[in-house]
Image (tube, rainbow, N blue to C red):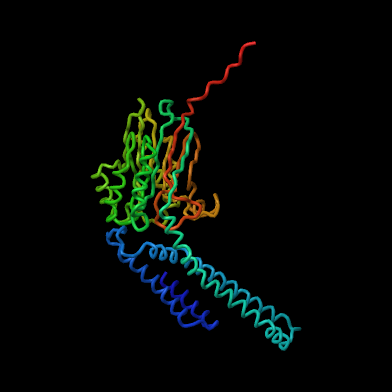
Length: 416
């Protein structure tokens, strides 16, 4: 990232000199670059348990740092490398074509170059300046948009028919909350609105599917207060997410268990609702939270092992709900009529319903998926680790469960 920023600054200054831009503009480029490098260094070095909710860096500047290093700079470097490859390939092609074409004189070639050069140089400079400035423009334009968006979330009302849902539980409601990421971007007034909105849903259960905090355990007290403020008719239960464990998983679990917030780590809780048992089961994340292959084959094997282990605790006479942060657990959750997950943020950056980060990294990324008489609900999450979303709005899901056993009686025809 450091080399990428310096490369951008150097090439931008070179382009600005060609158009004889003022020294103030050139100095602004270096100032912007050093601010980005300094901000990234601070974020990296402060990871020592300091609460992210109390960072002295203003949130818009934090957002700009993320946009630059995670979005704008990679796009710029990728396009620059691609352009260089195409340019050198074209030069090599022209070199061999000129050698093979003996009929074209050197004089005519020079004359052609002289006539075309002014337009070509002008066009190249314009396109070069546009390409060079695009990363900074992406960062500058996205930052104010993100500040508005970070305060927004929706209530997404979904319903599903489940063949295994007993008739006594028809109409059971669940407030599915996930991925609050309490910390650098989810902080302040929005936390109170999350509590108020969830309580206003008056759901039978509130089920939380991980990533309560963004990184720092220093933010866990605020996250715990958030969960303590949430009410549900028959209880609140939660599972852990990978961000919860990034600093110290054991401490996270100890604090959550000490607060009696219904954290289920390879555990089950049974609740009697309308005379029928509902069993809530929570799956642990199960490996190093920063594992690079967390969406790959190794994680699929891990999911199978974890589900097999927790299935031994299932009550065959109860309606079972599995809480698992990663949605790919669904492929192995054959004993569970309903699985709830988060983690994907709805794909975060989606150009359309099926094009974007969701389908690029996950088999299931947002909404309801059903197969073999069982269902999965994936929440986009209500918080943010990255400061902007496209086509994947933050949300709290209000889920209504319907029993397939309750069918409307057919209308009887009057006798002739």
